[in-house]
Amino acid sequence: MDKKSSDTGTSAFGEFQSAFIDEWFANLSRLSRLPDLWRKAQRVKKGATPSEVVYEEDRLKLLKYSGHTARRYKTPLILVFALVNRPYILDLLPHKSVVNHFVQAGFDTYLIDWGVPTHADRHLTLDSYVNGYLYNVIEFVQEQTGSKNVNVLGYCMGGTMSTMFTALHQKMVRNLMLLAAGINFDTKDGLLNLWSDPKYFDVDSFVEAYGNCPPEYLQGSFLMLKPISNFIEKQLNLMEHLDDEKFIDEYFTMETWLNDNIPIPGEIYREFVKFLYQQNLLVKNQMRVGRHLVNLKNITCPVLNIMATKDDLVPCSQSEPFNDLVGSKDRKMMKLAAGHIGLAVGGRAHRELWPQASQWLAQRSEKL
Amino acid sequence: MIGKQDYFGDALRYFSTNADLLTKLWTDVATRTMAAWFSGKAHVATPMGAREMRSDIFKAVADSADAFMRTPLFLEAIKRSLNTSVQYRRHLNEMLSRVQYEFQSASRQDVDNLMQMVNHLENRMADDYERILEKMDGGEKPLPQSPSTGDADAAQEHIAVRKQKKSKPITVAVAKKAASRGSASKKVPGATKPHAPVVEPAQKTTRRTKKSSRRRIYRVTPLPI
Image (cartoon, rainbow over all chains, first blue to last red; front, side, top):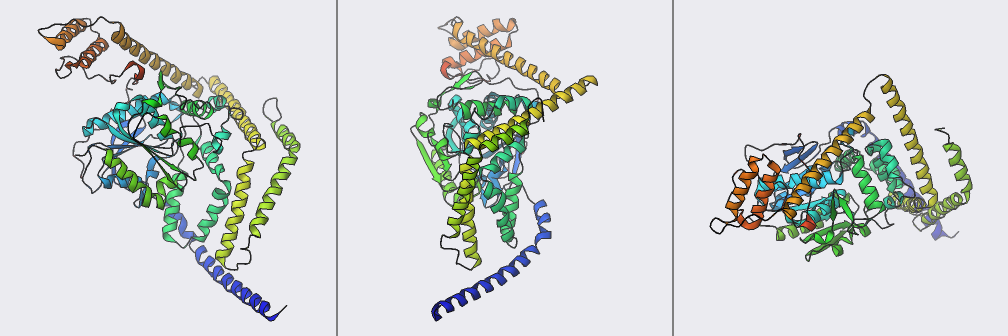
């Protein structure tokens, strides 16, 4: 061994020793924060922007958000969330709030909280939600604001339902924004599409046995989409950032939402799996909502289709075809390098995506 | 063991026959992990370097896991586990229903059946209502034209006759029809606001009968803006 390589080896070993000791003390400091974690986990606040319930129907609640900015647009905006999880992900933290972007832009902003279905709600179908609840909510908002039509932003499953609603009631919708909405389910990119293959998943017997789709089952499926990240990396990441106050606050807010799962009414779950995931009827214009066929060509309003390139739940290939299937001439697609939830809470989404989306909507809404 | 099938034994047999696939999977994971380990970052002695290497290893394992979760072996395994869980749930439901039946109390199944019946009734009523509206729109004779008074007066006359028969849905339908003919600006006395929008037959949509539990909270004071 020559002298030069011996020196390099000694210096690398010294560097390693020094880093090891530093990391050891850092870990001790992090561990001292552990007892405080429980208190922080209990302190999590749900929702950042001031709101009030303006309409209720069965378990549904319609929240109206208020801000310091004066209303600038006559056309209100209604955010339609999925039936899975709670909708406060769209208003998680003051600096990570989709709702806040639109409130600050001067829109009358409403958010639909579908509520937690009980076993008595297992018979609720897409018809009950799309032509029942959603229709009533939009009609109520029209009455309240005096606007002839509304802007709709649908997220995930809420996006699919908003699409159906717009196709059936085009006159009531002025602009349609979709956020990671599943439209074309004939794709093998997503694991959920594979797992719900009729060869492997008998949704009928599942719904017959369980009634509503249990939240634990949904949560388990979502976690299994990225097992290494969800079960190992996330915990390690938490350990390494125990001394970072901001990280801890955001972590617990996010975890509270992720674990705040709710069941999906059995019948609507059956319809979604059977008619969309397994038969892909929506893009074939053969999807029935109640007695009525959903024809995507009936959508003629401006559409903005937003998707995330790293989305495991709704891959881009599920959302992309939408723009070619509608009858609209004014259609735009936006892609962000983020995950499914990152679209709503990611730093990049709030820096780049939402200001643009808000501007797109402002240009197409009726001004006061 | 649930029912007559030996699910556990079946699963074991299934995995033993797919040993080749499992071996391939583990070899794959090991190869990818080693590749990440020897990717050139292993000599970095700082915590950041170690983290990067760890992240590469996790990525390799995650890719393998993703590939595995797409294999028929895994799909068959989740199918089996779901079937077992559904069977178990069914047996549990049956057993509990039987116990409740013996105690002469209502079981969840009874409530389910009742709810289903109410839902069917609701759907049938909504469908009937819609069919009547369709009949009114398509099959009914056109309203008499009166040059002196116009459509609205004719509609009012028509409504008055209908009102005598105490037929509320028809009243609404006629009012809607009159409104759609362009006389909407003149208010038709006695007619309530039509619930469903007037749309072309191809786009006709149902609006479900409002539930009795429906309640609206109207704000009294304006929102602070």
